[in-house]
Image (cartoon, rainbow, N blue to C red; front, side, top):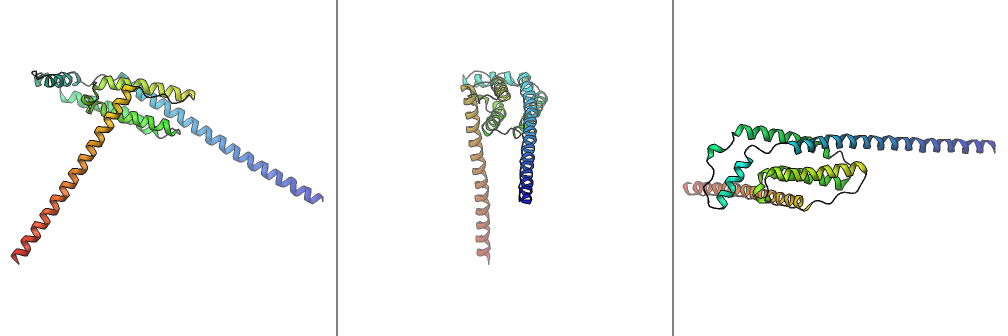
Length: 214
């Protein structure tokens, strides 16, 4: 019977060791995930702060005045008042650099809802300048609102708190951008179909000419 007791003891040791090994591996995996998310949070926070500190696009005020002059059937500001395109290009480059920094860390967060919210805010950032007239506020105002919401989200995430509701003005901006993206994508698809239709029409016309000449 002693050998049976020895076998049982060995099995218990092996099982206990296996459980301990699995627990250690899980602990290391969890620690690695937490460290990755903390690093991602710091990187995302830096990007959001830099976006918040970014000045308005140089031509923003000119475009705003021009837009409302056109809406009111008033003379538009002279084109020579528009800031140089190089200034806008430099602004766009800086903005895009910080947006890219935010984008690359979104996938490092494990919570699906939190990750989706970050992705939505990134989408709103991108469209805030292109479709500011549809949103109803200039890009800098929309950007500051998004940044405020993102900093709240990142703070809550760091504390383990629940996801904050999206402010109404940010939600409206996001939905407007998403609608415009959908319209643009439909237009792109229509253009592709038209190009293909015209190509087919030319092929058919050429085939008919070949038949007529043979």
